[in-house]
Image 1 (cartoon, rainbow, N blue to C red):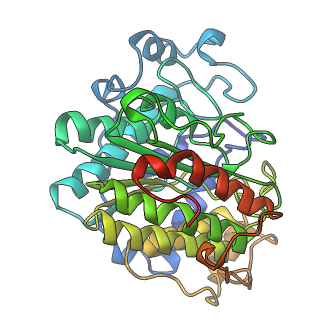
Image 2: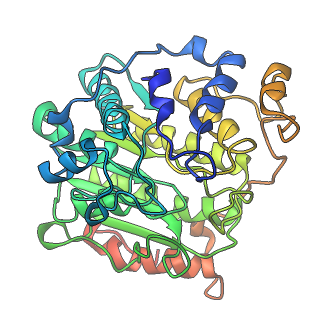
Image 3: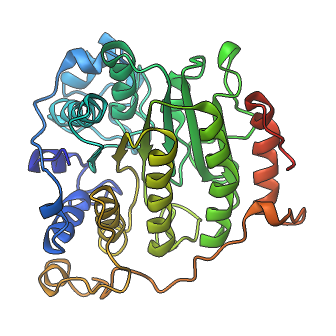
Length: 377
């Protein structure tokens, strides 16, 4: 786990969805549950402009460093208000994700996590959707240019489309981006339709599952199972980079999906298993979105840390009393929501009237032929 208290200073102030406390509460919950004792916690180095330049333009870096409003670059907007000193924090988050990727790629660790990372909306020349620098894309570029990785999978399960990472690698046939998200008809950033499949030699390398509002655990897990495993098996990646925004939860104030913490934990276990099966166990996990700061984010990401550590936290576990005192009256009593997460595999057949299955079919027909797979099987 690459982490320091400095990374928790990535926020846009009180009253903003990306406010203070999100990461800190998750790390403290994991600490009190004993999860951090099972992980080597590594301090990230300071931010490195050379790393940021692997993805972002020099004029954009200068604008962020200036600590001034630059609406041309999206700095000083409602979504991304001006925060003095943001360059240092955001660039250190990039450095932390690169350290995680380097540790996994070199074999120092089989898995690594930067829970403060996952800032997937940032574009090369601008901030977007609460994201200043795109740490996931920076880590992928580092793996390509300095690590020598040939084939990389980026898997994004945030409720919002992973548009920044997709855009940066849209014409790169050696980077496969997969995003499961709420339909862009209903939610920011308005991209991520099944028809967005890559460009040129990278046709089929962008995979988008645009899910209907209101989807529950069973529907989401069914969609994941129907799309992700067969594509990963066909692509044959060297390493998996994943983004685990937990704003897919039913209580998240910014989205319309209806997952439980139980379902989110199940997804983490599925990602871990796929990394072991298809990527030689090489897995780098990051955080991302999630705006139910007291009730959902800490539990979801404590579960993610437990899975990365190889010691999943039982859903029936009680949250520690000291942590509940820290959170206050809104603190949940247990690590799970008591949800039913059973789902029917797509191999049992389609239901053409189901909006979930319609999304699955759209994605499979858009990209499966590019991998030599039968979309209707």
